[in-house]
Image 1 (cartoon, rainbow, N blue to C red):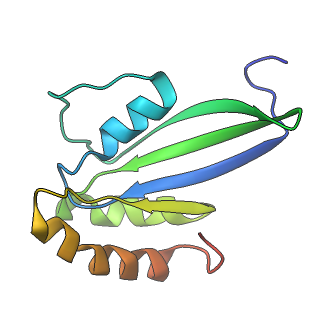
Image 2 (cartoon, rainbow, N blue to C red; image 1 turned 60 degrees about the horizontal axis):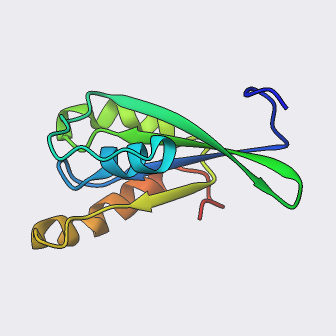
Length: 116
């Protein structure tokens, strides 16, 4: 199967405060890379990874959304069509955990009602 062929496509968004590790989750899952010196995401980036499950090709399209307040209007449009979301926080920064409630509200306000 060519790289652009797949049986199922799933869009998943990563959301959370700036600097909590969303970009590193993306790069670890899609490229098996980790960079301690990664820069803040500007706007939205995405990457894909295909895996085989029961002889079907599943393509995961992972969207990395900027955590900064100034990009909030840009990222809200990218919730549409997502079937899943990972709310990310930094266990060493308690405030990022406290802000998960706000991120969850934003997700519910902008995403499809059946998002996981």
